[in-house]
Image 1 (cartoon, one colour):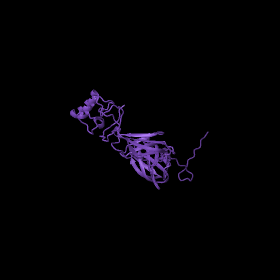
Image 2 (cartoon, rainbow, N blue to C red):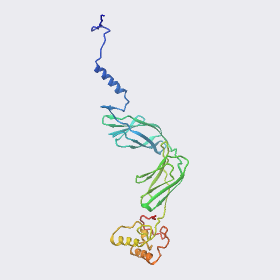
Image 3 (cartoon, rainbow, N blue to C red):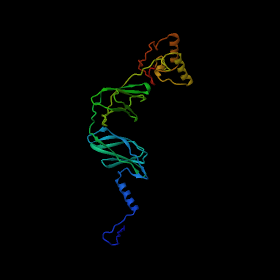
Image 4 (cartoon, rainbow, N blue to C red):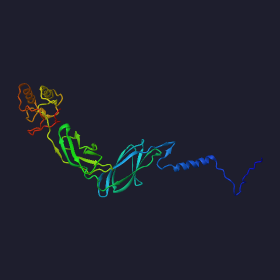
Length: 315
């Protein structure tokens, strides 16, 4: 059987063109590059991980704008992060950050986007839809909210409340020094210890499932009198000769100081000195009950000469 070969001559109108394999492979690479999602760039086979768990909450409200809190989990170590609002880049952030405050964001619907960069790599753009409101939908999360301040523990505030009309998922108690305490769902109180010798500035917020905080709640805080057991200078829960020894060791040997001044003011004269140790010894060995008294219950300073210190009744 004979075989017939067709050969196109140069210049013929229907000649065929053969594309070298390396050129064809190059075109395939270009097509693959442009077909890949923007923001998920790959270099040398490496893909930069995107952020995850991006969340937005609205903290404050105004007629035209609000303050938003953004937090997220970084997928890897980034050199910088790009923040977009409605397809417009509004900020470049340190790559190690995982939270940000967006101020004066206009009321209405917005799309927030965030992506990371590391060298030539750019992660996928992650977007979240959020509606900025002019007023909070959590208008009455709690009722009958009140606050008490106790001198114990270096100063303690305790805020209590009852259930309100609007449901909430969590809350925070914010102190003026920047510290904040989380409030768990269903809780009816929150306490902050070590706040100082006076009532600090603070505020309480409650957050619903949709990401909206209540307005700032600042209940009046009523100071409560310090409770202590007079004569219990070493704060061990009883009045004994060890209290007199403890006080003398501090006064004359410079050893450990007492926590509650009024507990060591055994004779209630507004001072702590040798006479208090003598009063304690007289109470223990001679039965001299004044002014310590026989009542073992903790009491406030009834003579209104509270000297200070960390005063609380030990168990």
